[in-house]
Structures are given as C-alpha cells and as structure tokens.
Amino acid sequence: MKTRQVQELSSALVQDLRAKGADIERTLSLLDLLDTRSGVDSGSDSGTRTSTKDLSIPPAGDPRVFDRTKSTVLELPLDSAKKAFHSLDVPLDFGDLGRIAEGKAVFTQEALTLIGIHLYPRLAYGVLNGGSATTYIDEKKNRELDGNAFRLFEGEFQEVAKASKAAPKGITPAFIGVDGSSGPSFLLLKMRSLLLRALEYRIVTGDEKTPVLPFFQMTSGATESALAEAYARYRSDPLLAPLIARTGIDPTEAAGAAQPLLAALSPFSEGLPRRLFDNAWGVKDTGLALPGGHGENFRVLADTYRALRAKGVRWVYLGNVDNSGYTVDPVSLAITALKGVDAAFEFSWRTRMDVKGGVLVELPDGSLSTADIGQAISKEALATEESKGKPILFNCATGLFDLDFLVPRLKEIADDLPIRVSEQDKEAGRYAQAEQNTWEILGLAKSPIIFAVTKEARFVAAKMLMETLLSSPIGRRMVAAPPAERPAPALMATSADLQKGLGVLLEKEFGYSMEKKGIYQALSVVELEKTIQKKYQE
Image: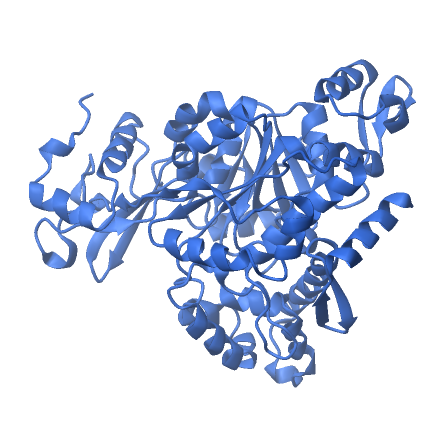
C-alpha cells in the first residue's frame, strides 16, 4: 500500500500545521498504520485490532495477578530462584534471604525490600507529564463528579484553578492543607521521594558514590519551558536542596524529550481512508494540532531508553505525573527482577472515583490488556460485568519495564500499540483525534505480571481537581457538613480512604511527620537519616 507523503499536502496546510507544532510526518505514519488495519476503523471502535465486544473481565483468582494488598511473600522453585538471584549480582547472601522449604525458596517482604534497594543503581524513574491543567480545572467536569462535593469546596476549587490556569499539571499542588493552603506540587513531591530512596540506598549499602535512580520525563512543547523553569527553582527548594547535597543525586537534572503534537484527522463521516483535517473553523487549509497520547513515549523517549540501558540501567519505572502514589517500590522491583518478567503493571480495585482511565481486560486469545473506559470499553459493559460479581481492576498507570525487553522492540511497540481514534464535534468543526495509550503495551508483553495494589497506597490520583481536594487533608470538611449537604456515601468513604492513604504517603514516602491531625511538617535530613537507620536496625 502506498504511504502518504508530506509533499502531497498543500503547502498552506503544511505551513499552518508546522506553525502549530504538529508532527506531520508522524501523523501520516499513523494514518498509514490505520490503513493496514483494515476493517477495524469503524469510527466508534477506534482503530483497535480487537473489537470492544470481544473484551472480557478476567475471573477472580487469575494466577497472573499478584496480590500486593497484604504482606508479600514470593515463592520460587529453588534452582530457578538461585539462578535468578545470582544473575542480579548484588552483594547479598542468598542463604540469608531465601528460606528453603519443600524445594522452594521463600522470600519475605523484608528480604525483597533489601534486594530491591540494592538494585537502585539499575533502576530509572520516569514521569509522563500531562499537558496544561485545562481539563483538570474544567468546572463543568469537576461539578459532574458530585454536586454537593463541589459546593463544599467551591471556594478552594476556584482559588487553585485560578492559580493553575495554563500551568503544567505537574507543578500544581498535589494536596490542599486543612487550612486551605496549597501543598507542594506533584513533581516536587516525586523528586523528594526519589531523594529519600537515594538516601535509603546510601545508608543501607554504605555506598556513597554510585549514581542511583536517574529521573527522566516526557514533556510537550506546551509544558517543556515551564517545567524547566520550575526545576531550576526546585533545585534550591528546602524540600530538595539538603537531600541533593547529602546524596549527590539531583533529580531536577531530568533526561527525556518533548512530545510533539499530532494533526487532527478527517471525521469518519467523510469516509475511509482518513486524511488530515484541513477545514478548521471552516477555513480552507487550516488544521489542528492535538496531543497524541502517552503511548507516544515509546517513540519520543526511544533514545532516552537506549541511553539508560547503555549506562547500565536495567529497569525503568514509568507513571503519570498526577498520581501521588506513584513512587519507587523496592518489593515490586525485586519480584519483577527475580521472576524475570518483561513488565509489571499496577492495578487497584475500582471505586466510584475511577471514572476516567483503563481497566484490566482479557483478549480473545487469553492475553491481558487494558481498556480505556468510554473509549475501548463502555460504562454499560463494565456495569454488566460488575453485576455478575466480577471484580474490576482499575489501571493505576504505573509500569515497571525490563529494558532488555523494551529497547529491542521500541519501533515494533510504537507501531503495534492500538491507535484510538475518537470523533470530535467542537467549535473548530467535526474532526477525529488519534491517540495511543501507554498501558496497552500490556497486551504486547510476553510475560507480564499484574500487581493488585491498595488504591490508597499506590493510586492517589487526580484526573480532576476535585479528586485532589477530596483526597487532601481539607477533605475532612465533608464529615462536618449537614447530612443533606454531604456528597454521596460511597464517594465519602473512598475519599476518607484516600485522605488516610495520602497521610501515610506523606510520612513514609515524602518525609513528613504529622504534627497534629491533618497538619504535616517536612522532616530535616538529620531526622530522615535517623528514621531510616532505626528502620533497618530493627
């Protein structure tokens, strides 16, 4: 089949799209990929290889799901456990870590933690930065979550929304204090968490020199400069500066690349094959430049992944900027390394607040994947599955990848990820938007593992500002409201769990102490060192 060429487009359209930051060549290549997937682009079915009606929810007890909601124990056949352990080349004694029972090696959570910490020099931590916080602070969408909740927090909502307008989502507040004050940003907390893990490595191993946990990111043309300016400020922030000096690690020096925009496509109503949309606002040769989805990271960050592997990094964490529960977990790292899987993904049991994102599904061939609610699987289909008593696992947008799996397949993955084509009817006209979802790589991995995690521990996420408010200390306001003015009971229960979870995260992952109920104070480096030393002496 003939491939599309930029030269075939009108020069006026090319000039317009380039001025708007659209990657025309990549957009045309996606159109070519859609052409090869004959019969799947039906307008509503979004250009996937598998029809949404063929998706199913995995049954309870699926052996590919590893329960991380309780104290973790890993059992492996003795011979394979020894082989896997020695391949890690860590300065630890297998006999001191793996209890032998009935021909198996049994690793406790404490042993797995120690193994994972020793692997920090071979682990990188990556963030998929969203765009500007436009949808995040959209008042209509936030009101839709719960009218009573919005009314209770409308003042704080308007204040944060005003301050966050046009800002990258990652540098907006990760939580709001009980007094209504804004806490540190999502990215500032993530960098502090990385530095705490680096400090943990220095204390546990005694190694003061080896670089550990390099930070990388995918930005966009709309956010790159604002993020760089923020990182320059963060370098001297009291939450980071003393830890940077103590560990010799500086996460503000981020590696990575900026994701270009894609051109909008012609709508399905104009027939197939699709072409570039060229009549925005009714003006000839006028296009639109739109985000292409985080799945583009496997192309945009390809050189970053290769460079990390060349420097000796074996595994990379990848997650969304707006999830405060996305931190380095040494236990999951150790399990992933010892089991030798291609990738590991985190999912939690779905709650009322989990309305935007993906769920764990099974394809007709028995393999697992993730399907976005509304795009790849309908809310009605999920409701039907839930009525049958099937547990729904919601995607936490956190993955842990073996670079030996990822790097040789980067082009293949970028080309094989499903292309979601959604129809749009907006002021600019009727057009279509093509996106790729990072987490659908699950369906391409040969030996993935699913970590079923506790939502409040690993998925304190915020697709909307109201979710940030409801999981913050200020969320306690709900219980003091008159019964008729309170949010729905299920939402209140989930919010209470998330407030508790955020509190645990602040203390265990971000280096805070709770001075009094709902009020947290950042610990100094000296206090943090004492806390870590005490933990591992015990």
